[in-house]
Length: 244
Image (cartoon, rainbow, N blue to C red; front, side, top):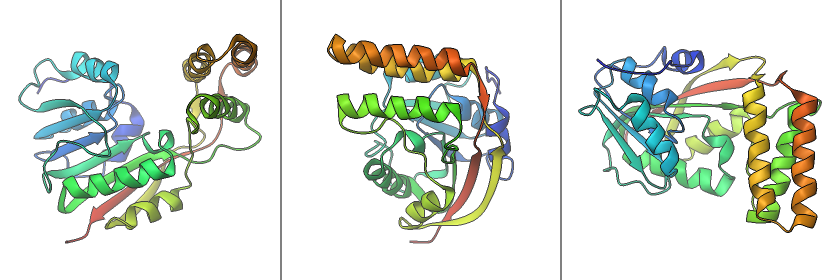
């Protein structure tokens, strides 16, 4: 078994009570491949790492592709309509995905995940709770959402309470089996803060200078003011797909 890259403790903790070895798995929203690495390390028979971002797909291939050609398929696709066959997956993971999906898209993704999953399969959803209003990072997230709304007409981030996600997935046949806390508080590092401010700058670059420059300046000021912060929680929900 050949896997490269460290597996974050949050991924290990989220998968600890799941049957991974020998299973066909889907990482929904592969990002940089943290959960793909975790699934491969835990002995998954095959992992479909699905993302709509070509750069992320390349990162996953570079990170865990070597030695795993027979067990890994990196798929660049819209999670609302993947090329995976119906009833083809034993375990689905969505680690830090839902907070970047507005409700309409999240509903469509939940339906698609239910379509590709076999009856009695499992789903693990890990995400961030609504951050405290008093947290400094909340101001940065609000700025990111404001910039996104101006450019795209939709928020960049939506933080869902665990109960809301549980109800959303239940509407598509997923029965919740457990909930646990992965992080309390969440350590928002300087790298995290800089990454979110970069998103603001990217939106600012698409706007006239009279609007974009103040947004970029506000992002820079928040980066300097925040540095790093420990605030909020990250939770994990585990579901089973009822027989259809």
